Amino acid sequence: MAENNGGGVPTVIADDVHIVYRVNTGSAGKGSATAALSKIMRKGKGDSPGVRRVHAVRGVSFTAYRGEAIGLIGSNGSGKSTLLRAIAGLLPCESGRVYTDGQPSLLGVNAALMNDLTGERNVVLGGLAMGMTREQIQERYEDIVDFSGINEKGDFISLPMRTYSSGMAARLRFSIAAAKDHDVLMIDEALATGDRKFQVRSEARIRELREKAGTVFLVSHNNKSIRDTCDRVLWLEKGELLMDGPTEEVVSAYEKATSH
Ligand SMILES: Nc1ncnc2c1ncn2[C@@H]1O[C@H](COP(=O)(O)OP(=O)(O)OP(=O)(O)O)[C@@H](O)[C@H]1O
Image (cartoon, rainbow, N blue to C red; front, top):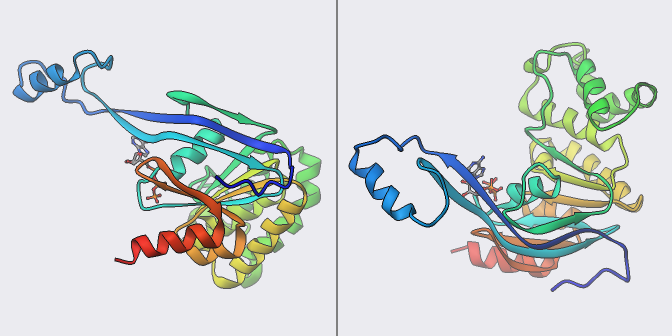
């Protein structure tokens, strides 16, 4: 639908993507009536006993271009995080394809840093995990810590991450990820967790990343963050792409639909 690419270079192409989780329900026990019933229901569907399918993304197609910041909105459980994980290559597609130009990096509020290690060690760990060299990390270390603001109220960077508030931890995660110029940067709710001052800073950094020819995806329930950051929005509902277009058009339609 949205063709605001200005003749740009595609960075992510999703082509009729379907993603199915398989959940072990543990109800495969012999003899129980429920087990027998689910066996009958499952017949011909090709899944093993005790496994339930959750069809989280259903036939989503879009093309993202270099320089775009794309918001993903939709109610809880609509498939936003699942779609991001598939673009990052962390989940396989049941059918359809995701093509990417460059390495997509997913920055979630749950991005795996080690709680028992200090902030300092996590900066190094996170940098290495993103493919930076030790020298590059060394070079950017001060900037990362300054950007995170972790040390504004004392020397917190040398304390284990488990002593951080959720906002502080989210800020550090964002700062680590934003230290690298990404081909495709995906942010899951990270902005919603920092305080207003940090949000302003991270929005500015996202704009910079976009100018460096990357593509940014942002999943958020905060429509203001989406409006401030994105120029295009995908609205997912029950795993399907309901709307794809300019931010104001899609967010207004979403607000209208969810206001009653
Ligand atoms: N690991 C998992 N195993 C099984 N089902 C899952 C898993 N993760 C998500 N789901 C299911 O997939 C569907 C989409 O979930 P997803 O987390 O992608 O939604 P979301 O739009 O990001 O939601 P939210 O706004 O609440 O973060 C939901 O029905 C959810 O229950």
